[in-house]
Length: 405
Ligand code: MLT
Image 1 (spheres, rainbow, N blue to C red):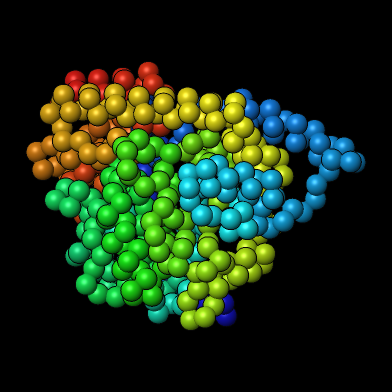
Image 2 (image 1 turned 135 degrees about the vertical axis):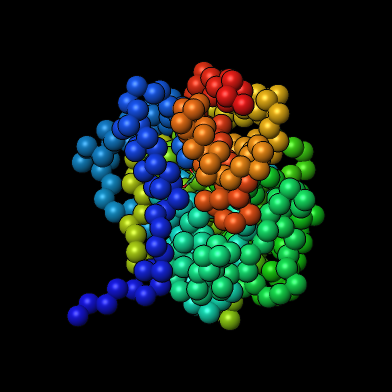
């Protein structure tokens, strides 16, 4: 008799974005003539930068030659990429991160989901509410969630950190002990960015309580406000309490190409165990890393041409965010985010639920969004839009919504 994992089976619904896709596909099948504008999942629409394509083409050709062929690579990533990341994303910005503290992977989602392997089931997990579902679902799978209460939409084992308009969607550290703290700034889904003092409070808390901060920095490239940290390692003390996840997905258009990295400082340890060593052991056991061709493509992001092309992509998405912000605000909607972030967090009008406003926009305006309630109870009464769409469609989406309301 085979027994199914008891914690995994506690997850009854679909993964959030699978559920949205299901609803949208069902609607599109019923109304095939409707042209939908998709601003739901944060998937990019700009093609890969030319410098990346050139580097990957050359690397693919190399793989077809006896002299240039690469078999298994180092599980933690090729030195050429780890060195480029350390130099350009950290050292050039005055942040201490060494190449061997960088672990190249196929996605920040995989790493945010996998990092829990290092920690005991008994740890208390603190989660923002609303939150990127991966942190929550993977901790349910790992047995850290306790029981789900349908009345509140909450799990008994998590320490929820409400993110509301009142606290600017940036929670302060709790009075209680939290062992594992997932933070994502600029935030998915609310689009809020955290200031230096706010992040410093978390770093101090984590060092005081011997907690570990799991910092998702997938959207750091969107920060434009002076003084807003782009890395947790800008804060003094973070090297003894934080792990950072970064991605090429939203900057260089790698959502379909897959490359990301995780930074674990060498001095980060708990109970005398190096988390750097543990993650290296975990990765060597569970993955053979990212393919050579893709890593060469990621390396090209740091060339002068690659940097200029990525900057153009970011500017394009920032203009989309401004278009949405301006259009929706003029319509009378209350809009948060979209400044240091590709996400806009929009209050539903007339106290509609997230789901009913999501359906209204889908059915009447043909605009796909994400219902805020899918990210947690405090997401109720909001929807999320992304600025990763095509510029013309983004403008049209704002106009369609304005015409509807
Ligand atoms: C999102 O829409 O929240 C993101 O695209 C999800 C992800 O990056 O996995």
